Image (cartoon, rainbow, N blue to C red; front, side, top):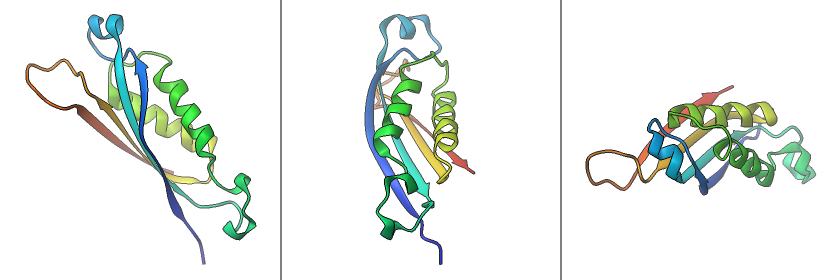
Length: 122
């Protein structure tokens, strides 16, 4: 029998400068990230060992490095990079579902945010 479970990091907030327009790079804004990570532990959970699972503190730091790092024109590309890096860093992850929200997207209308979700299956 194989055990699997999902670790969720919800509404991680970062200040960054992603976007297509020059003003988005100049002004920057907050971005919010959700990461749903499907995990197959490397050892039985009864071993109670951090090495068998995804250290969500480290996962958060990886997400932060990516979001606050190199500028991306598309939040789609940003979400994909997060998923790819997390899956490479933690071989226990079988699927990473990454959502990036951009509350101040430059659209001619009133909205709460623009959101993109990428599903990355290993």
